[in-house]
Amino acid sequence: MNKRRVVRIEAKPGLAAEARNALLELQQATVAEPGCAEFGFFQGLADGHAFLLVEDFVDQAALDLHMAAPYTQAFFNRELVAGVTPIQKDWMG
Image (cartoon, rainbow, N blue to C red; front, side):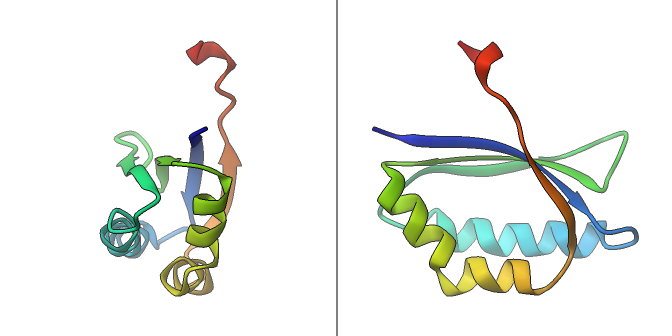
């Protein structure tokens, strides 16, 4: 069963451009994973520090491998992110 997550990522003040570039790098590596069904993000128009990330993996094991991947860890180790908030999907049906 697919593991789909939608999260809001808030970049630290003054680091929106760096966060976007880091997300682009992460996206490029992630979509090459065999267990990745979808990985994309959108940057807020009114608030450029806000990003909406949509990720879909074939199962929990694929998501776990993604989270442990060196490039995923490198993204978080860059300390560009002020917070990550899961978006409840109840309204999506």
